[in-house]
Image 1 (cartoon, rainbow, N blue to C red):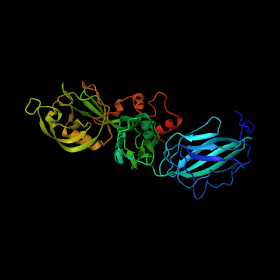
Image 2 (image 1 turned 45 degrees about the vertical axis):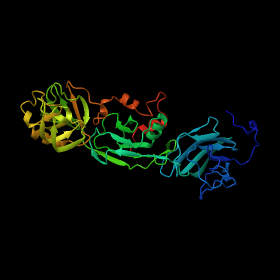
Image 3 (image 1 turned 120 degrees about the horizontal axis):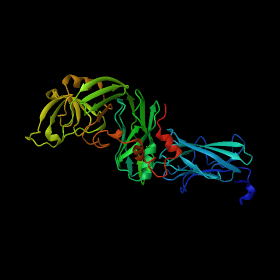
Image 4 (image 1 turned 180 degrees about the horizontal axis):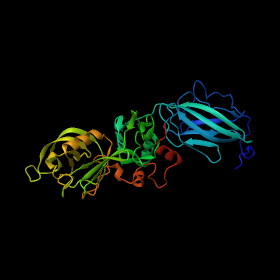
Length: 423
């Protein structure tokens, strides 16, 4: 497309004008003490292209409006614009086909300072660059969207998902995309991963496969000061860092009544066990260790067994490793040693001798994987009863993302955000 000034109705000028504004923000001006954009004189770019800033009154840009960069009287075109705030957050944008206008496509942060770098070429193809600064005003927030990241910082097993709990529901796909873009997960070594919306107030992040052993995972939110919806702005969130331990996977075969514990791919112990009997069958599928409790009092009433019935029980249990919130454990069951390795006689838990339960208790941590196969029970639920996240295949998991689940698919920028980066 030609960009010769002879084809324009405006007069040709020796000086170019680069206008930075907030769309529909007629009173907003963008400037700084170091680089006053309101200065009427021309500013010479490194390549000799003349650029001039807009006239303004010193007030800050409205964060409720998109940012716009236009070449009003510049005999050339814009080739690239990058806008980054003081915390390192990039503002995504779109350049018009003729190179005359760039506008932001993601919300500005409120009460923030941006550096805008504009690259240009003149009619002869000579490159130029201009650096501009702007500050945004304080947002008129009525509600703050808070995010609590989990679990708390510490060391976990390879199956531990990252969680993000919101203090208010987010239902709009567009608003969910704003939230998800701001939630960053970085790992060393780098692995592909994705967020999944469990419901309107909770997201989980997991890699395609289990975390690599001994990985470092850093999680943060860039949502502070970002507009999410009508008078809803993101709040501050404490970051977290996870250290991933050895890859520990406990595979329980309910058909052969054996549990084999693998560490970094090598079988280190095989234990005789008993799992759920008919009517109380242990759930199949992948579960994640939620907690370890040296002593638990287990009652049949907690799983709906009437007190005094033939199935009723009230037992002191030691070395209990919890894998569901509804009460499924791997634990010491000295009363069933004769059936361990032979038959399934429990009410859904995986029972073993006290000695073996103590060993298991001492060799697993939160986030380690416990998988059950060949049980007559149902599959472990993906959500709501612990971390069954791994029971969704990768395509279904990615379909739960606001960035990859839509019909149009992710943008290049979104694809980059979904892959944790090397630190």
